[in-house]
Image (cartoon, rainbow, N blue to C red; front, side):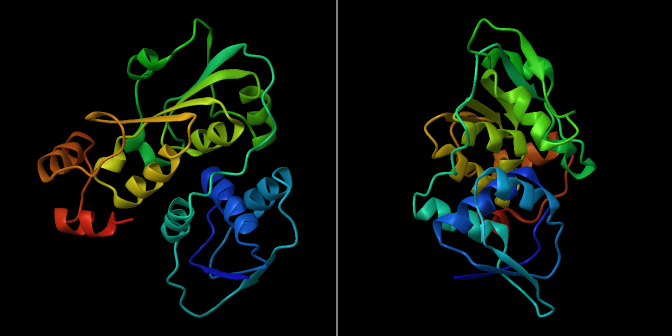
Amino acid sequence: MDLFIYRIFNALGDSIILSTYFKAFDIKRVYYNRAELNLLQTIMKMYDVHDVEFIMHTDRISNTMTEVVKKLNKEKIMLLPFQSHGDDLYATIQLKSHHESARDRSIQLNEAMPYVKYNMPVTHVGFEKNVHELYKVMNNSCQHISIDSGTAWFAASLGLDTTVISKNSYYFADAYIYMKYLESHKNVEIYQQHGKGVKIANEFEYLQAASTNNVQVPPYQTYTSRAKL
């Protein structure tokens, strides 16, 4: 089966999602128009996903990652599981992304600490040089508390008790779609600004969240239209 997809980002979460999609739907060829494939191919190897050919495609491609996520959610296909984790030595936390465009997702330590469920030391992640180093750290974690980031998806696939504090899913439709899918995993809890669980913000919540996080947003009707599953 073939997949036509607009771009393939060098992102950990998207790489785990795509690896799951490739295996679930027996994808053999992927046509893309822009890509950084190194991390994706590393994740595919780690998750035992093989025999996928990547082909540069110059024509316009409209299918995006949100469509991939929607289909996995609709078909109730869970993320590929990775190796079972080792000893429970600490809880892991990621408070921010190193990408400037994702700074509105950031949280403070005092926002994350109330969600720590176990009487364990806390170790920060997100500074590792590669995904193998990240795995070594998270392999011995009992719980992962995170923003909406690649480490949240990695923790979910590792089977860790995963808590995600998602700010931007209140005003960014794609983030809402991603979080609805991630929330379907039994080991994952997601909190938006209203509390536990993922919902579409009402117009007041939408505008308030965007203002609080200092981001420009489209009209509310555009958000609700794009957020349809």
